[in-house]
Image (tube, rainbow, N blue to C red; front, side):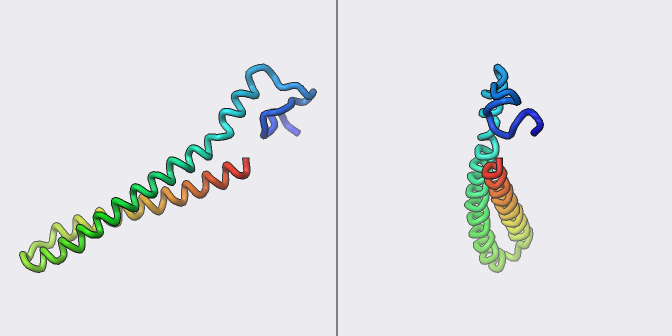
Length: 103
């Protein structure tokens, strides 16, 4: 088995080198931290997407009365942007969670 092992434990002779074990333990939680951050980003992005969707529906009603189409297009773009950010951050969160479970 090549050194360093995947866990903070004993080295080749059953001893851990000074300073290496705390470094390895500190980095084992990093995928979990990333999963939490991307999960929170996903929730925020989906909330913003819902708000922009509501604004888009209101703009469609308002545009029908006033004949302006640019506002609806911009709001549709906002919704697509935040929805895409929410989906990607959710997938990254899931991948980080799986990486944390494997590590």
